[in-house]
Amino acid sequence: MNQLDTTISASRKTTAGRTAWILLICAWILFLIPFPGLGVVGWILNFVAFILAVVALSQGGTKAGIWQLLAAIMVSPIIYWLIGIPLMAALVYHGAQ
Image 1 (cartoon, one colour):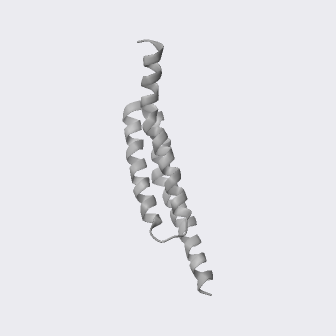
Image 2 (cartoon, helix red, strand yellow):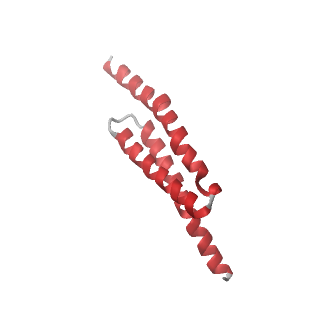
Image 3 (cartoon, one colour):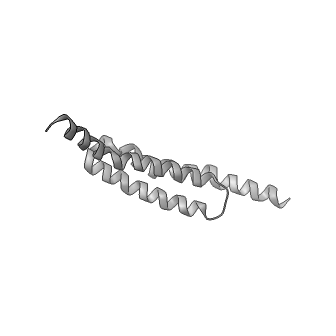
């Protein structure tokens, strides 16, 4: 195998991991936008990122997708429940006054 084949093979292995990070960041942004319904879209993106993290784990080994998997399982609920929902409630409360 020459250098080009090695480079192409390495980039294919990390594509799922990079895409998972992009989807997680998009989901976290959607969690923080105080508009009804965007949280559901964020959870769908989070689920897809979770699946891509599992794909990255299966293709590239443990180091390839473990951080994306942990972020999808642990960080996303924290951002949604501890930041996004209180932000939405505060804006609704102040908007009603």
